[in-house]
Image 1 (cartoon, rainbow, N blue to C red):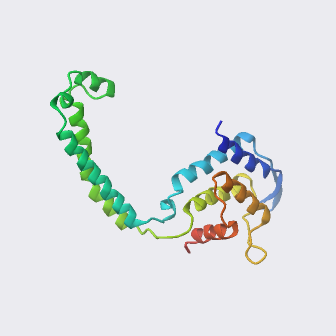
Image 2: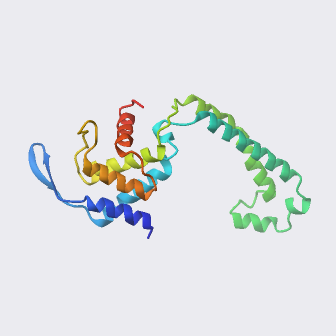
Image 3: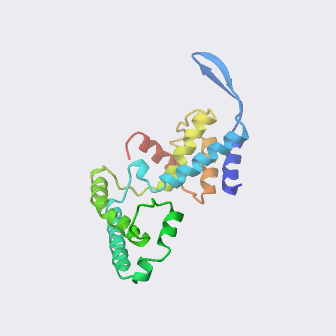
Length: 214
């Protein structure tokens, strides 16, 4: 099993305990969750890091860099088409063309060669390039110097703290410092991703993002 997942699951399990809660004014108990549930939560944190670390989930994006990268991709696609056009006929029309189509799952009535099919796919990028550029420009993305990877981990870890472990939403105490137990929890998880930021400041950034103040 993934060592990092095991580490995160163990951290979550360390804060997994019986807690007293109130439902409609009546007392009740929240029982500790299973290790399997801890492991599931660990997976959700790792997925959040994977998919949200670029910041776009939070409304942050370096628009100029993204547009430049899209332009580079378009250039590479066009260069690939030129290279395909220069390939020898023996490559563009191989004798095993129909066998190749069968292996790739193409329809038998597709008469163009595999290489020509590939070229057509590259040319399709031109059809969507302008739409991609427009969509990036139209979105109201903000620039931010905060560490998006840290924000991604904290966001998901905070949700698990509240929803899965049924802990109270951390409140700032001692001149703005978050609760020590929650701070240690976040710090431990962040370290599994080789991230060691100023936890108090990182959590404040998360709260500001939630409130739309970043």
